[in-house]
Length: 217
Image (cartoon, rainbow, N blue to C red):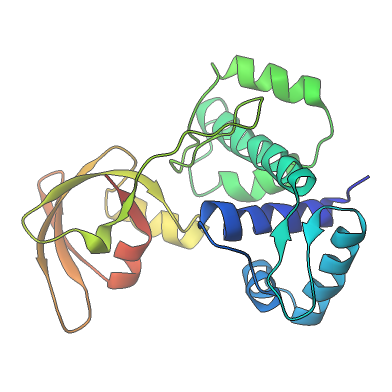
């Protein structure tokens, strides 16, 4: 049996390794991502290793075993399906769904998730543009770039956001920006990487941090 806290660690490792295309995650990276102390993360990694869910040796990076990856994808699938349900069926805004889905993802009922997937019409992406794993664990992959990598004079389409925090999503909404909208990069400042963009015929000036968290094609 895997506890809800252990599930959170597995999901975090999936993000830091597989989704970020990394060769592994350090204990400090994991602790920072989950906002816990490194010693706390280290203790949990040892527990997950005992359960055969992670590969870990002292002073080396942590990676998921096949069993760990399978479990992590299952949790991620539930999380993103619940986000989609809250957004599409209960009219939550995209900045509200994450915290509620964090609680709902730990419900242990494969039949419920199967019914939820069917009810939603087997969606491939959640409200933030993140791919939803299917029942077999497969996920659609899209070659995405950061908005900050787009050169002035070029246009692109928003497909996802890296930062799912409520504060960031509320800011994005205030700017009138959302998934599938087109952005034109008007200019970029060499001094700090900030840029002027055009969305829906409106011009906005955004920081490099903002542009790093908007994913486009």
